[in-house]
Picture 1 (tube, one colour):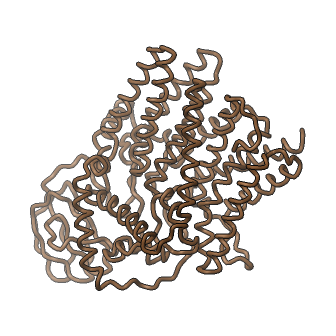
Picture 2: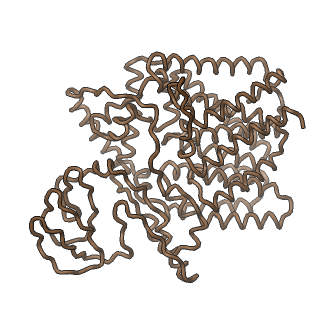
Picture 3: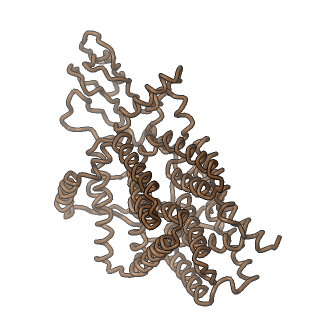
Length: 582
C-alpha cells in the first residue's frame, strides 16, 4: 500500500471516528481537552484532530505538489493566513475569546481536508456507505443524539440504493421503514430547529425525486413518494410539539410580543447602563437534555412510551430563577426567595393559606380526595384535592419518569396509542415558545444595529464579545450573558457576517453557489445518491439558521466533512477530476 493512500485512509478514519463518538456523547466528548501551561486556552480534542489531519495534509502536499492547482493553493493559503492573522489580532487586542470565534472559520477547512483524503484514499462510495450504515445501526441500537439520526439514516439509505439484488434491496427498505416508524414520534419531539430542518429536508427530497422521476416517467415511484410525504405530514401533526408548531405557523403572537418588547426597551434604554462583565472562553456542559437521546430499541419494550420523553433536570440556580406571576391563581403559589417552586395541578378549585418563609412545600397528589384542613403557622401543608382525573401522574421537578414494562403485545399497542395522545403535549407553553423566537429576533436586531453604528463593514474582531443590550434591558437569558460575558447569536450565517462583514457575505455566497451547482449536476446526471447527500447538507444548513450549530465541533466537523465527500462524489459523476476542485 502506498504511503499517501495509507495516510489518507488514516486521516479519513480519524474524522469518521470523531463524528461517531460525537453522535453518541455529544458535547461531553467534545469538551475533552488538554491544559497546556504555555497556552491561554484549553486544547480540545477537536483541535487535536484537526492538527493531526492538517499535518497529514501537509505531508501529502509535500509529496505531490500537483494535488492542488496554483490558483486554488493561493486562495486556500490566503484564507488560512487571514484566519490566523485575525485570530492573533483579536487575541492581542481583546483576549482568548478570539480562539473560540475563530473556530467558525477554520472548521470549513475540514471540508478541504476530507475532499483530499477521500479522493486519495481510493475508497469507493460503497465502502464508505457500508461503514457508515454499520455505525448508524449500532448507534440507533445503543442510543444517539437526535441531531445525528437523519445523517446516519441517509447513509443507510444510500447503502440500500447500491444493493444489486432486488430482494435484498426490498428487505433493506423494509428494515429501514421499521426503523423510521419506531423513531418517528421521538424525532418530532426534538428542538424546534430540528423539526424545521426535518420538514425542509422532506420537501427538498420530495421535489428533487419528483423532478427526477417525472423525467424517467416513473409514476409508481412518484406515487410512493407522495404517499411518504402524506405520512410525514400526518406524523408531524400527531407527534410534534403543538406549541412549537403554533409558534412557527402563527406569527401574530410573535409580532405582538416583539412590538411589546421593543416598546419596553425604548422606554428603559435612556436609564440603562451596560454592566462590565468578565469574558470566559467556555463553561462545561453540566447537564444534557434527555430528550435528545434516541434509542429506538427501548420503545418496543415500554408500555408507556410517553415516559421516554423526559426533560433535563434543572440546576438549582435555574430553579431559583423561575419567574412567578404576580397575580397567582390557585394553579400555583408564590415562591419565596431561593425556594424551588413545586408545580400544582391546574384544575384545583380549593384555596389554601399561603406558606410561610422556610415552610416545606408538600407535593400535591393527583388522584386523592381528602377533606381540606387549613394549615396553621409552621404546620406542614395538607394535600389538596384535585377535581381532575388525568390519565397519568405528572412528574415533579427533578423527578425522573420511570418507564413501565410491557406485559403483552396488547399493552404495547395501548402504549403506542397513549403516546399518540400525549405526543403533542409540551413542557414549554406557547407563550414561552414565542418568547424563544423573540429572543432570537432581538439578538439579530442588536447585531445589525451594532454593525451599522460602529460601521464594522469588515466585521468585528474574533475577540470582541457580542452583547445584546435588548436582552440585558429585559433581563432575559441572564444566566448566559452574565456567566460568559457574551451571548451566542443562534444563527451561524449571521455570525459569519458579524465577524467577517463583507467578506462573510462573500464566503456564504460561494458556499451556496457550490450547493446549488451540486444540485444542478446531480439532477442532470439523475443521481439518486446525490440527492440524499445534498439532503444531509440541507438539514444542517436549516439547523444553522436557528441554533448554535457550525460554531461547535461536534456539528461542524461532521457537516464540513459531509460537504467534502459530496463534492468528491459530484466530481466522480461529472468526470471533473481536475486538481483543486474543493
